Amino acid sequence: MKIYDFEGFPNPARVRIALAEKGLMDQVEFVTVDVPSGEHQKEAFLKKNPSGAVPVLELEDGTTIAECTAITEYLDHVSGETSLTGNTPKERAVIHMMQRRAESGLLDAVATYFHHATPGLGPDIEGYQCAEWGNHQRERAIAGMRYFDSKLADQPYVAGDSFSMADITAFAGLAFADFAKIDVPDDCSNLKSWRQRIAERPSIAG
Ligand SMILES: N[C@@H](CCC(=O)N[C@@H](CS)C(=O)NCC(=O)O)C(=O)O
Image (cartoon, helix red, strand yellow):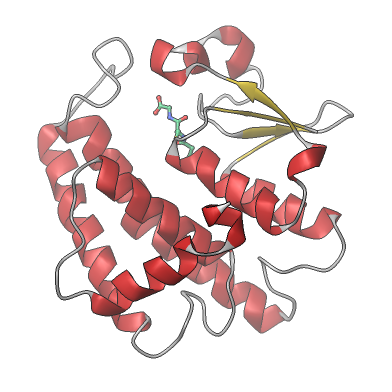
C-alpha cells in the first residue's frame, strides 16, 4: 500500500502513529505530496482525494481512502486484532464519539485558526481567509483543551481505559496547537501529563 502525505504535518502524523502502533510501517511506501508548494491542489492529486488534503491511502487494487479515521479503521482491521478502534459495540461508539470531539473541537479548530487568522500556508495556497472565524476557532480549541483536561481527570485515555484513535487525534491536535502558537492553559495539568505519557509511546518516541 501507498500513503500520499507530507511528513511532519498533523494529519499525516495521525496515520503514521497508527501505522507504527500496528507494526505496519515497513509495509507502506510513502509518496510525498508537496503541500507547501500546492501539489495537493493539482488535478493529479485531486483525482485521489477531491478534498485536496493529505493523507491518502492507496491500496494495491487502486482504491484510494482519504480521511484519517477511515484510514485508521482500515489499518486497525487489516492486521488482525483491532487495538485502536475498539472491539465491542460500546467501545467502538465511545471511541468514535471522542475521536470526533478531538477532531472537531481541537485539531480542526486549530487548523481553522491557522488557515484563517494567520498567514497559514501563504497567499498562493490560502485562497479565502476570514480572520474573525479563525480567531473564534482559536477560542474553541482552548475550550477543547479544557474539555479533554476534565475528562482526563477521571480516566487515563481520551476514550476511557485504553489508548485509541481518539488519543491519536487529540495528540495531533496539540502538536498543531504548538505549531500555531496556541498554548495549553497552565492549569490543564491532566492534559499535560496525558500528553507526556502519550509522547513516550514507541509509535511516537521512535
Ligand atoms: N479530515 C482530514 C483532514 C486532512 C487535512 O486537512 N490535511 C492537511 C494537512 S495536515 C492538508 O492536506 N491541508 C491542505 C490544505 O489545507 O490546503 C483527514 O482526516 O485526513
